[in-house]
Image 1 (cartoon, rainbow over the protein chains, first blue to last red):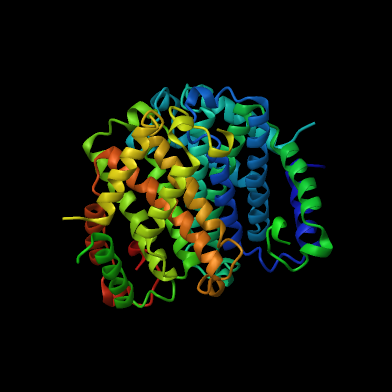
Image 2: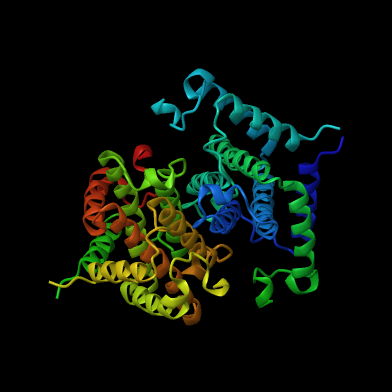
Length: 116
Length: 116
Length: 116
Length: 116
């Protein structure tokens, strides 16, 4: 069975191995690179209003997509380096969030679960 | 055809709609939340050596997995909000990186493409 | 002549030396710690509207102040570790920004200098 | 009595007012900009070893200084916008850290205070 994220993970292993980059790709460094890319993603929105951020022009949207891709590529590589299945981890976290944010208390409320 | 990331995206739409959270989930806010979670991920590594980061104890690895999941959950929601296909964006970026980092010049070298 | 930032820098050197922490305080690690604290600072604002962020309740403002302090403490330590004078660097940058953002073109405009 | 940080704060108010930028400088936006610059600072170190980060070449050190300056400029503006005295906040935090990290327990140990 094919899966888009697993395919990407394999391509990224090959990409790094072809370049002998595993030496640089410690989890510490990959986590740093991920944050750096997340910052570049946020840069597109730092002076925008929320309303403007909901109506990006097509070229801006593509630029944001490229930064989002960078974050995802490092996230996958970090997960691979640590032997973490990112989808399973996300499913687990989502179930936990269902418990922390019950619909009746969280509806229309942006407070953190411990302040609800 | 099923795909793990697409399934997660749909569950997250339902999760936010059940709680009437779309009002808070502007791309600007989702990008902020993504960076915040990326920082929490990095916190686990900030004082570790690279060698230590390659040999996490199981409980530490689980904690890192939970932060990585948070980043992924916001990444998916941001992509959905903007109508971006994260896998397609990542594939495009990976192809671009193949061109920017040719194997013969990038091998064993961590320099940025414009300094190679 | 006394100066508040220089005094803090000296206290921080003593604080770290008393604890034999210089071994952990590589510029790489200090820069990571700074980003992590910057993320904790942003967390206070991630779901707030801009208007709400301008009218913080006193206890929230104190919490933000404590995160802002953490960022400043790591910034000073990073500057010390690298032999950078943060005030001089900031003055230089401010002068550069005067040139990049001339009043007549930048007024009321949040665009980046290369898009003005 | 003059103080370097207070002087900078005043120059930054004038700089923003000259450009009618107060409308963009909500605390939410300033906190975002601060994180973005912190990411650019970290980018210089993401693939460096800790040892390399302790021995930056002069041009690299200047580049790091310019990013550090950007972080400081936004930090000061955020503090001004919220009516926070950054030096007082840092002094308070440093005193708190003296209590959280007593010398005899923290010496040579990078653990967080609640794990000491």
